[in-house]
Length: 308
Length: 269
Ligand SMILES: Cc1ncc(C[n+]2csc(CCOP(=O)(O)OP(=O)(O)O)c2C)c(N)n1
Image (cartoon, rainbow over all chains, first blue to last red; front, side, top):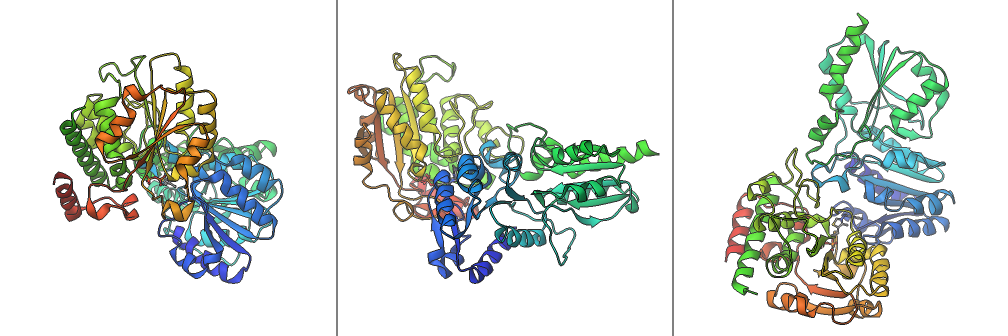
């Protein structure tokens, strides 16, 4: 995902005269090419995230389109009030781009486990949030967000799923993207965890005409009516996110189901309001917290068993 | 202070950190080597701690604010007997409590978990304030790039305002941060006079000279002037292994095969 972001960033800098890239002392080896090509558009403000957002807000206020880059928790939690008051409230074109979403930096410890960023930002009105699942989504989402008015957040992970090569002409904010079609159970996910969902589906060996897989690439804003119309078609919905469900994908889907009194039944896979105190690689931690493909596929099997 | 012993201890710490990061394929070896000598002096000669009674009330508190160098503190704690050295093999492994950034959970002797830069000094201020009338000293060890965070400067003001004379802040001034030099990223100079103007008693030391470090942080010197103390330790990132010194590649890379062998040779020389 980061590679795609890098490429798109350079393309964009060529097109957008007012673009600037600000980093909080992160991205060793990532922005060399960018810095060489556009030295005046690149600035490392140091390990200072509050300052980073404040400076970016000031630049944006004077007409710049700013990209801010750091690791997910530092870019969201450390400077939350600067995001809320300086950037969002003034509707400034500050585009936060984070790496290390979810358990990407699993062995580094809890300070680097980014499992609340989506939820916390989601509770701020008037912000656009995206966590793409594939390289194609990353490319579309990044370009869309930068050209969206106001403040945006793009959460990247190290690896994008290439299990389903997939491209479409359009990418719409707030709508589900359908990756496969079935009629009984819909799996809806956000972010790189998409690859676990595909694997879970493959592993479950359920009749392929019964399972749909969607991503909600943008968590905010959402098109509620569009979502409702899709949700109502299914007897069962699974939501999957590498994030806390409170304020995350699970709670969004749940609130739509309740609001429109849908008959759909919902199962939420998330970090489940837990902080992991152990470390491990991303796959290991996904398993530990129950959002890995084996756990999901065994739940798929259970659903179909109870159906028969 | 027994200089031979401290020197040997620093060597052992470097070897541990090297092997741990190499085995785990994890980052920040340069940042650990940078503080190896400071940590050796602290744990060998300065800190009043009891490995068999880690929560002993009147212990000195040590906080690693540059949490990304946690590996070498785990090594020091294991060597001092807080837990078995065998546990170090779990560093950054699946299911382990020894995370890349220092964590206290189920790790005896770790005073506080960090990993997000710019938290340690404020916490140290709180601990120092709580223990101002007790015979407890608080040592905070931070990096230079970390000083970009404004929180530190809030804490600098707080500490002198409240006369936290039991607080010793050590800055690992290796002049490099994540991408570039400190000078190029966000110049700290004139650092000493900044800190003095914030009301601190400031010493400069060679952060790899055990005797110098010791002379500034041993007990007698502390609590003289009703001022918090800041040690600016001039260090070299990657110190001890020539090809790692002053090279930020080793902020990210772990030594592999031949590199590991060569690095061990450098340290044991
Ligand atoms: C709040 C915060 N922002 C960013 C990071 C990512 N990060 C880890 S180490 C580092 C900088 C390294 O330079 P320095 O602080 O001087 O420490 P050194 O490695 O040189 O000891 C950064 C930016 C972090 N850990 N915390």
